[in-house]
Length: 193
Length: 287
Image (cartoon, rainbow over all chains, first blue to last red; front, side, top):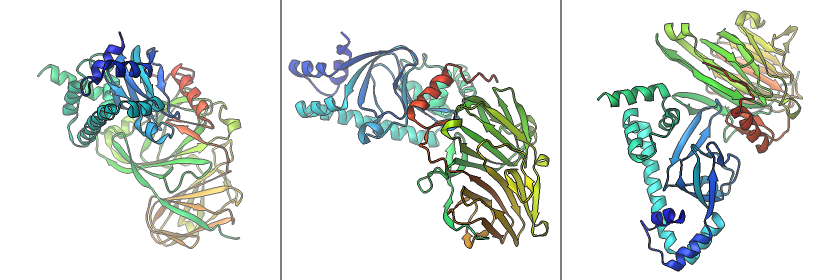
C-alpha cells in the first residue's frame, strides 16, 4: 500500500492512532508524473506540499541566459514544495518537475491547515521537518560560499545516497554550481584516490 | 531647446551570474524597467590574464524581445540557430531580434582566451510589442568602423550612432521598433548635447566618469539616469573622461511577463515558450 511509505515517514517523529491515520489518508492525493512532467510551474501559486513515494523531483529556477539553477532534489521519502509561494500566496519563481517517472502524494494547503487543527501533533511533525530544512539550507548556503567543490560533492552523495547515481551529471553540476566538465574531473579524482 | 528634466538616478547593484559578478541598474526594486527597456547588464570591466575562460554563455533560447550587446572592450563570439557566426570587437554591437524564438551562444573568442585583456560589455533587453513578439528572428552585427560618429565640442565628445539619427548621421542598425541607441565617449572638461524625442522614453547609463546631466550631478559610475518626457535635449558636462550609453524608445504600455530567457505578455505565453524550446521548435545549436 502506497500510504505505508508516508505513514512510515511520519512515524519517525509522531505516533498516529488508527482513526488519525484514517483521517489523514482522506486528504492524500495520489499523482503519477512522467519523466519531464511539470508539477509546479513558475508563475503558478504553490498550494500543495508534496511527498515523494518513488522517482525523483527537482526544484529549480532559470536565469536570463537560460541557465538552470537546481535548488534541491526530492528523492523517495522526501517532502518538497515552494515554501515562498506556499506561505505568501504569491506566484512561484521556481519549477518543480520529475527527473524520472515519479509518484507523489499531494496535500492541499487548506487540508493541511485543517489537519493542524484536528491533529495538533502534526504541528510537531512539520516543526521538526522545517527545522531540518532550515539547518540543511543554511549549511548548503554556507558551503556554497566557502567549501571546495569536491567537499560539496561529497556532501551531496551523503545527502542523496540512494539516488545520486541516477541523476544525470549535468543536474548534479547545476546543484553544486559548477560546470559538468569540472564535476567529471572531481569524480575521476575521487575514483582514482 | 528645452532640456529634459532628470526623473531618477539609479546606481546599479551587483548581481552574481554564475561565477561572474555583473552590475544591474534595472530591473531593481528602485527601477522596475524603462519601458521598452526591461533589463541592463553591465559586465566588467574585467582584466583577464592570458589563458583565461572569459565569457561562457552556452547555447540558450530567447523569445519576445531583442537582446542587444554593446562591446566597449574585448570581443564577443556570437553564434545562433539562424546560422550566424560573428565575432564583434570593441566599439561594435550585436543586435539580435529574438522574435518567435532563437538559440544563441555568447562566448569569449579563442584569441581573447589565449592573449587575455579587458572585457567590458553591456547587454540590454529591448522589449517587443505584442504585435512583434512572434516576428521572424534576425541578427545584425556591426564593427566599430561601420558605426558613424558625430563629433561635438571640437572632437572632445564622440557620439557613436548605433541606431537612430543624430543631426544628419544615421546608425547602421535597422530597429523594427524605432529604438535610438548611441554610445558616447567624453573627454575630461567637455560638453555634449544629445537631441531627444520628448514623446519617447529615454535612459542614459554612465559606465564610468563624473558628469552633470541636465543640471544633476552624477556622483558615480554604473548609474542609470531616467528622464521626464518634457524636453528635446539632454546636456552632459563631463568633469572627467566619461562613457555613456543612451537609449530611447517608444513606451509600449503592455503587461510584461518575464521568466528566465523569455519576455512575453502573459504567463501562459511564457509556458508556451518553454514548451516550444524544449520540443526543439526554436532550433538546436551544437557546440
